[in-house]
Image (cartoon, rainbow, N blue to C red; front, side, top):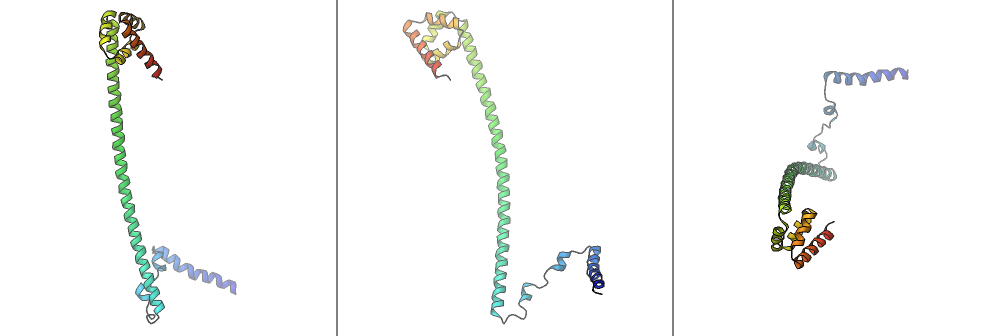
Length: 180
């Protein structure tokens, strides 16, 4: 007989649950506590411990609510700061790319100018090139001599006075040693 009761009890509990599912009701509302905070103390106001506990629980709930609001605000602030940082990072990367392109363009222009200058000295007569190089700063003159064609460089150095030629040769040697 006890085995016959189990299916009946299961049906008694399953039928209301099935009806609620059929109607689409929210189970959370049904299982929620129906007593509000003020109702908790009903009939217990003469017990100081119960009143104290209820007040402490209410205070804790308020603190937790404020803390959660503060966390939500911090999260919103962090999201805004992250968006600002991402925007700024994009701007900086674009700026870096523009600077790099500008630097590459100016470096290329300088190289083109130097190549033209070297070609000019390659085409000059050695005596004329030597006269000009002796009036230039020695490190600049040595740089030019290092870049001209070796034959033209040899003829220019031969046309320079020996003291100046020794100085230019020393500058060229020092530049070669410094160069990695």
